[in-house]
Structures are given as structure tokens and as C-alpha cells.
Image (tube, rainbow, N blue to C red):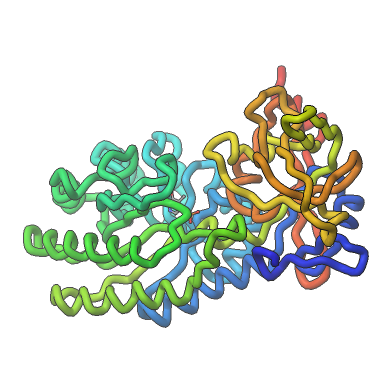
Length: 432
Ligand SMILES: *Cc1c(COP(=O)(O)O)cnc(C)c1O
């Protein structure tokens, strides 16, 4: 059984991805190699767009959280699919601008936007700031005033939901570096302050409860808490937010034991609760935004490597070392991320070989996946790590002065380079 419908095997016994023979692609482009299935990305964007309009109403829109995979081609696809984007730094804004993405549709996130970032964003007429703190609101207001502009803003509110996911990716708790908490009462002061700034136009609220969330329940809780909050704000200040941004976080299936989340159905459930809640509170239905990152790109990605050393420690364990590692995929090292691994040129053989897949970095923690079962690999074989479309290329580093792999897009039987492989010259470009 494959974990996503863009994965299969062919008559040669090779792993296929988006209809392509992965072993052929590894030969053509070299390894390590990131692959992205463009049709899958577009399909996901359309699924969100359609389901959100249907179940939340006309103003609803998905906002692609571009930190999941940020390079020019991704912003062009978002533009073509007519969806919004999230950006979290001047670098992402610059990339979006250079891809001719209209950033009046962008939402600027981050818990510590620098003065340079704030002024660059306002100069380039960014759509919305998602203000993370009172300090930041003051800075945005001052900079907008300096530029003679008014800036649209959403406020990042911490609803106090524990998503039961890994702590490092749970962000909706009261104890979080992000946002201002309802539980402490500070969120009301935050709104009061925002309403008082002359160069800020308050449009509503944002919350993001975490990542790898597999149930609609978490989002339903968020709607519940955020609409109660909005109603209380209305009672205190007479202000009714126009936008409610529910953040990202829908889960992705990395291994067969995880569920295959039905996005449309989850959105339908959240939509029903929202409608009921607004009726109960006698509030207008806000425009609902969601910010999927991972669930748009993760299963549209795959990484190919070449096997080098296979080391068997007698009566203990086996290590399979590949030509990449934590520099192109730091997620296991960071938070024990799970992945499915396949020996791509032996994809139909029994998966009997128990091993740990490691990289080539000088670091014992340089592990891609621990204790897996794959078809026994030998030097020169191609190994595929599945579901690497999110937070792999975007988290890649040049640790050990390794060059970042290219991103090759696959679409309708055509393969093309979206990001070139770094060269040795690229590695020393900034050294003086
Ligand atoms: C990271 C992030 C997202 C995307 O989360 P996913 O789990 O990738 O869907 C959305 N919104 C904000 C504010 C984020 O920080």
C-alpha cells in the first residue's frame, strides 16, 4: 500500500512518482534530489479553495503558508491558482515580489519582525500584517505614519488550545512565544490598543493552534473560543472583526499508520459549527481564512538519494548511509519526524532489511529515519524518502558545506528545474 496516490511502482520494479520513474530521474539530475509533483500542489490548493468557499461562504480563502516550501515557482503557482500567501520574513517577501506575486494578498507573520522588515513590507504595500504583540503594533503604526499610509492588520490571538501534537509545533497554548493570550485578559487590551492607533486599520483576528492536526475538533474549538472572544470584544468596544484567520496545521500522512485526513469533510464540519455559533451569538459570519502549508506541499514532495556505505554492526544494527542528510532534511534531528523510506530500484521486493538511514554529515544525530524496514540496499542504489515537500528544502542548510539539492518539478509528464543545484561557487559566494 502506498501512502499517497501519486506514488507507485512500474514493470522494472522501480518506484514511480507523479508517473515518473524515480530511478531515471535520479540518473538524469543526480542526487540528492528534491522532487515536487506540481499537479498535486494545484489539486490541494483547489481542494481548499473550493471547500472553503462552499462551507465558509464567499469571502473565504486559503492562504498558502509559504515557509513550508518557499521559492519563486511556488509563488507563481499560488498566483495562478488565485490564492493568498503567508510570509514570515523579508526574504520570503522578496522572493514573492520577484515572482511577481501581488503581495497585497500576502499576510505577514512572525513574532519579532525587525524594523527593516516592517518598513520594507509597508513600502511594498503588503496586504496585512498579523501583529504579534503590542510592541510590534506600535512599530507598525509608527512606520505606517512615517510613510503616510494606513496599514491593514490582524491580531494574533492565543486561544489556549493544546493540540496534543509535539510540543515544539504546538503554538496555541497560553505559554507560547506567539501572540497574545485570551486567558490572561491581555488579548482584550491588545484589541483596545489596535483600535486606538491612527495608522492602523484593524481587520480582525488570527490564531494558529499547531501543526500535524488530524481532527476537525481542534479547529472547531478554535472557532468556538475565537467567536466568543470576538463577541466579548464587540460588547466592550463595539468593534466586530471582519476576518477570522484560523491558521494552518492540517495533518499529513507521513507513514501508513497515520490517517489520510479528508480536508473537504473537515472544513465542512468546521463550517457547520461556525454558522451555528454565529447564529447563537448574533454575530455576522466573519470571512474565514486558513493557512495550510504542510498539507499543500508535503505529499507533493519526495527526496531521492544514492546509497553509499552499508554498515552492519554484528548482532546490533545496520546503518545505511546516503549522500544527503540533515543538511537537506533536518526534521528527524529537530523533532523525530517520521518518514516512509523505499529502496527505489527495489520497490517491489520484500522490505525485510532492518536499518537506520543516516546522512553523510559529521554529526551522530544526522539521521533521516531510525529503525525502518526496506528492501536490502547496496552501494549505488537509489533511496527515496517520501512526503518531503514541506519543511525540507525550506529548512535546508549548507552544514558541512554541502550544496543544496535542486528542486525538480513534475507536471503532466514534463520534468523541469524549479531551483537549480547549488554549485561549489555558490558555497563560497559570500566568503571574503
Ligand atoms: C507554520 C504556520 C502555518 C502552516 O502550518 P502547517 O502545519 O504547515 O499547515 C500557518 N500559519 C502560521 C501562522 C504558521 O506559523
